[in-house]
Structure formats: C-alpha cells, structure tokens
Image (cartoon, rainbow, N blue to C red; front, side, top):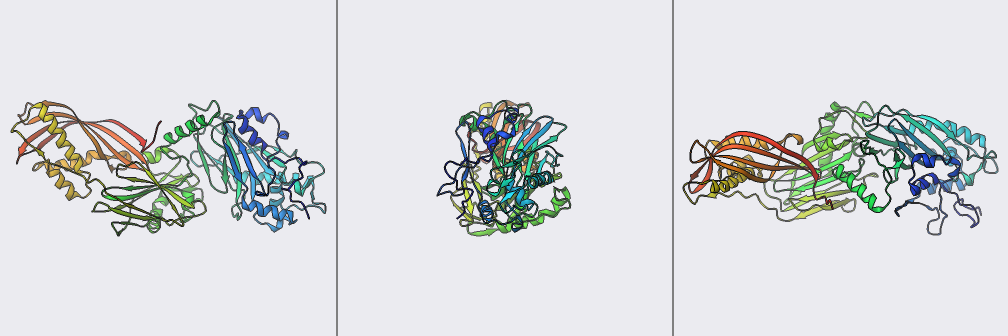
Length: 601
C-alpha cells in the first residue's frame, strides 16, 4: 500500500509550508530584516499528521502567546486524495489554491511577496508527471512563468476609491525547484515566490485586498494566508483571504505604527482603539445588525457588504466593479422588497409592514455612515449598504417577534445587537435552526405633567424652576410620534396661538441635519440663566442648554445647543404656561459620536 504524503516516517524531514509567514510573526521584525534573509531559508510549515487529524493543521504562534490554528479545508483533503490516486490535473477543472502573501505598505510603494505551492502549478496548468511520478524542472519553471499572469489577474489591490492599483512582478524565485525535478509527494513541500511592486503617488488611506485564485468561475475555494505590514511593522493580526471576499484596512500616516504588539495587553489596546475609532465596526467586511425597540416603533438597521447582499439579491449595474448613484436609486425598490420578505416583524401579536426609512451605499470611511454622507459612486468591493427598516406602532410595544430568513455561505448566522429603550445592549444570534427572536416587556411611557401654580406671580428663583419644567415638557412632547399626540402634550404647557408656532419652531430645532434630518431625542434641559425682563412682570430673559441624541447602527450622535429667548409665563387655570416665546439666539455648542454601551476601561 502506498504511503500518503502526510504520513511520514519519524526520521523524515518535516516539510514546512509558510516559514516566512511564521518567522515574521514570531519575530515581528521589520519587513527588510526578515526579507533580507533570502527566500532559500523559508520552506513552509506542515506539522505531522496524527490519527485524529490525518491531514494536519497549521499552527502560527505569535511572540505574545496567541496561537492561531487554521484547519485544512475539506476541499484540500479531496485534492490530496486525488493526488495520491495519481489523477492528472485534467480531472480537476477547478482546483483549490492555498497560498500566502506578505504585503508591506509604504508611503510611496507597496511590496507584496506571494508564495505559491508547486502543486497549484501542477493543477492549474495541468502538468503531467512521468512514470516515476516526477515532474520535470523545465515544466514546473515554465508553469511558474506562465502563472505570473494568473497572479496579476487574480490578486488585486484597490485604493480608497476602489480603483485597482497597477502592479509589476519584480522577481520570480524558482530556486526550490531542483534540477532533477520534483516528485509528486514533494509538491506540497515546495513553492515558488513572486515579488510584486505597486508604485503609488501618495500614501494610501485605505487598501482593499482581494484574491480570486480559483478563477472567476471557481467551484472549490481558494485560501490565502495574509500578513499585512505598514513600513515593515506588523499592523494587525494575520488573517485569511477567502475566494472573492475583500479585506479592507485603514492606514494612519500621521501616527504610523512604530512597533508590533508585544503582548496580549498591547493587542487588546490596539483592538479597542480601532473599535472606538471605527465606531464599533470591527471589520469592514462584516455584516452588522441592530434592533431597536422603542415606545413608537421597532427599527431594524443592517449594515451589509454589497457583495454579501448580492449572494441573495444581485444588483444590476453596467460596470461590474462600481455602482453609480443612478443605479443605487434603481436598486432601492428591490432591496426594500428583499428585507420585507426576509425580516418580518409582529408587534403585540399583529404583523407590521416595514417602511424603508433609509438606504445608503457607503464606502470605507467610517464618517460616511456616521454623518450621513451624500450619495456617490462606490466600489462594489468596498461598498456597504446601510438599510434602516421601521415598523411603526401607535400602541407601545409589549411583545415583539422578529424573524431573519437570509442565510448563505458567507452569512451562516446574523449576530444582532438588541437595544430596548435606554437599557444596556444585549445580543441575539439568528441561525437557520433558530431564526426567530421574541421580546416581551414594558417600556416607560412619555409623561408630560402640568406645572401647578402656587402663587399669582413669580420671582427669579421660582421662575428658574418653572421655566425648566415648562421647557422640559415642550421637548418631551416630541417623544410622541403622532402629530395629534404631540399637540396634546404641548397644550399642557403652551397656551393659545403660541401652540402652532412653537410646534414648528421646536421641531425645526430638533432636526439633526448631520443625520439626514432625523428628529433628535432630548436627553437633558438645563436652564443656565434667568433675568427679569423690562417688558412686564411675567416676562423673563432665559438662557438654556439642550442635549439631544439620534441613534443609528449602535452609534449615539449627541448634539448640544444653547438658546436665548424672552419667555412670557402666565398663570392659566392654576397652572403655569408659556404665553409667548421670542427667540433671540441659537448656537450649537458641540456635536459628537460615540458607541452605545462602549466600555472605555
């Protein structure tokens, strides 16, 4: 019986695929330091097989103690079986590809070193072995040369605008191909290397890397181990590029990394800083879901990579790499229908139709969705669709049931952050076997109470208290969504003809232009100063400060504004009411965005 190439005698030299990747991670050396060692020092890593794992695993150990275990893909097992049985390359029309890449990003150029295993050359170029199962050096080197075009076609770097960078192969290293050729059992132990340079005119703020080494119509997946450096310094944990799934990275050239993380503490600090900077969006290629349950609506907000969305809903466009603004508008109807069908909701036992209140196509810049950027052309390799579905309810929700039906190879589950009222966030994971989430509880209702009058007149001290309570009531009235309810609540504190004017004036002041005209929720009213007015005993010059928030995708957008006005306060039917408001000035004090529930400690 033949011996599988993964079962080796104890005294046989262990083949090691990916030593360069391992060595660089272990040492965290600058790119130039380890690259200068020469490619002949790197032979790859393939730990010996065991009875429980006959086809092995890859273990990458970092100096700070973290170990990444990458299991061999099951398709790899199928490929190995084919090789052991002596099948020719023509038997596998769409072979799997396992490769590794080290990419060093500098201010004026990007350097990539790709390692391709010899078995990939055999399969992609359908090489045939001789009767002794030996592949000739001439055939392998010729295939490596032909493979240059394959590498350049299917390994892509894109800039912040989604445009592909033009690269050039500077060197092809075939030194591991011995003059006598390579036996079939050695194909996974040896590799060729491609040194590629990408000249750039300016430092890159973002970079998106994609590999499609299975080709455009691949059936079996291709996997690339990726290590990314900035100026020769490891800038993030090594990751894997799977077939056709973009990986985007942001670069800080004002404060570039000066050393790699040396401990788990350093790694956590770097991760937390990135999460805070990205407003909770840990990865540009991730699918994010937020479910809000409020007194007036259930709101489901989804941030989804465009390529993931197209697993279910192809979006028509002329250019396969870009989506134009006009095409985004056309896609709106189909996206609305898709989410209505895939995410039905019932409130208090009654199904509620979804309203698509917002649909944006965002690029890589976090500020795009934090500040509601204007529509523009986006790269499909970088774009994310921001979808907000509102399920309104005239009655305060007591019970909510929501389903999620959309699952795929790249989205086998949906992790959702659930935000109920002002409670701390919780998590819900939708899976094929568990597609439903149910909530039951009680939400605090808006409460607007009349301000009783205990005397016929007001001094400055009493006027300060009354003004605060009346102004708080005015803003609290807008916690209701129905105009009739808002008017009724305002009538508790506002008299006569002022009601309509104050409704329009206050609503206009609460609109947050930074969030597409969303109505902010007032979280605090502070009366700063009250002075008697010269106009009459019932008028006061009042300065107050209002803090309001709008919340989307787990982000809290907080705005603080100062107002100065002359208020006329009168006693009407044993209650104080606003009879007149003459606005003198309005000034924005601050605007900031934070993550709800984010722990900075």
